[in-house]
Image (cartoon, rainbow, N blue to C red):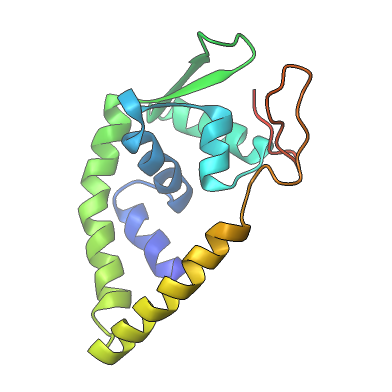
Length: 151
């Protein structure tokens, strides 16, 4: 399924990783997020995010600039080209997911999946805390573990 999803996005000029980053940026106020918040949103490590953002920046999908609140921080901004790429790819992506995953399910299977999700998702949310095993910096901000901290 992942290969089919990746191939579908590639037809629209995006990688799955591009799409994973463009979606939360498009939902963020003014299409902007601090890099460390974006990393937490998509559960990526600092080095992976930094390298991928550099590639997306070179393609004009995002822009990066110092955060006005914190000179050490980086603000990631969805560009007009990035928004257009996402708007072009999203309907095809949704249709592909529907075709591959939703449509083949019977009503009984869909109901069972909803029931399972209703049990599993809240339990996962209760035990998942990205900062649970992290330390606070001297400034009192949470520092992300496992190389996930981003300035």
